[in-house]
Image (cartoon, rainbow, N blue to C red):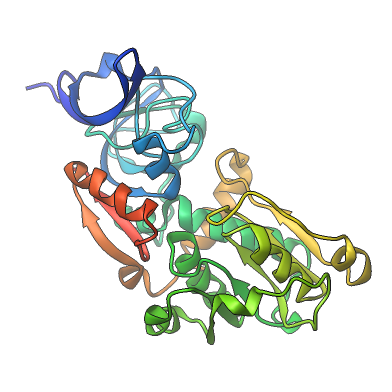
Amino acid sequence: MNPLASFRAFRIHDDADGYRSGIQTIALDDLNPGEVVIRPAYSSVNFKDALAGTGKGKILRRFPLVGGIDVAGHVLQSRDPAFKEGDAVLVTGSGLSETRDGGYSEIARLDARWVIPLPAGLSLRESMILGTAGFTAALALLRMVENRQTPELGPLAVTGATGGVGSLAVAIFAKAGFSVHAISGKPEHAAYLTSLGAEQVLPREALATTRPMETARFGGGLDNVGGPMLTSLLAQTAPYGNVASAGLAASAQLDATVMPFIIRGVSLLGVASAGTARDIREEVWRRLASDWKPATLDAICTREVALDGLQDVFATMLAGGSQGRTLVCIQ
């Protein structure tokens, strides 16, 4: 049987019958146009996937779409000479499960300009344990080091440290030579964070200050939470340190003063992984496959599911019960 004529995909609808998602049997012609057709091996689950799959967040810009903002697999067909049958490739973000069909499918058709050859040093499985979460953490570090962040400035704080981005940030930052202080409201996971490379695991109260400036405690950090914790992290960052903002798990608001910026020269860096330019994207993946590759990826992958298990994962994630990364095994 032709695998392109009939295959399973996790599809999301919003129409007269309401918002709904689930496994459907579709064909290649049901997917968005693209130059590269692949047989996915793995995907992953990100917070954005949970929002899209349940309708709890306005992620998709058109319907219906196949969910999944990450995918990795082997090329079946390509109209772009840069790719040939059998090539191992990956895509993260780049409009997947937002403006075009994503990776939760037994067949995926992709826009060639966003397809990245799997870099030497990574397996397909490892690339999806990393996925958008690892890419986001590494992109944050790239932005920081390009703005003169060094280990000598002090430890890097990571908020929301037990989540996917947070767990990978702890491991990636430590591998890159930085001291890491993990901030978490889940003390029962302290040993897990230490195993990933955190030198200290601090409670949320470490970032509970409401004063515009505090004693400099951190060289910088990555915030996945937003709101008062980001404000407090800025107030405790050393002169000319960098704080990267990559999430809003607690709040989209930022009630802060300019004091850390004009007195200490602190920089607040935005991290928007979905639309990253290709040259930067390739550099991030090069680093993730080499000097920034965590040795603890298997520990960070705390759950593996098939397409049929996605709904349960989404519910757990949105309830705040997830730890580490969930790998989606498609084939």
